[in-house]
Image (cartoon, rainbow, N blue to C red; front, side):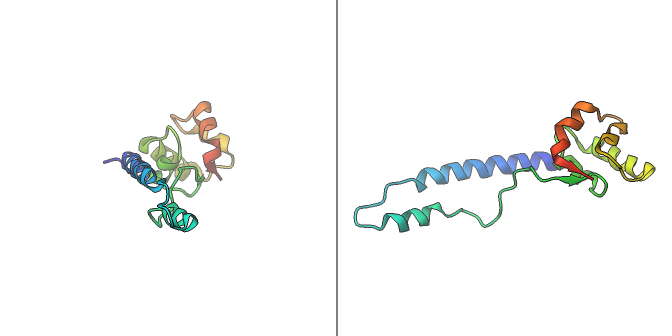
Length: 119
């Protein structure tokens, strides 16, 4: 299964689980219990793992094709491989605009991903 699809499915499952958990966590405390202590107990996250938002930046001069396809919106593995191949043939990108020299990468795709990529 594609890595991107696995991430989406995992995120959906985690989101639905957290939603279900939060319904039970927002119960009124029973009479005589310390409401602050009860709130602290239910407000703790269900897992120690950080939630990945997908907003991390990726360096187009060092990232693998898999990293590029995961981080960039509208870039699948084929376009990501084309970016890596272009980088190997012509050297590192000197500006983000040079990304448009890669077949399949246009101005709109560059603008959509400008906040996700770095040199």
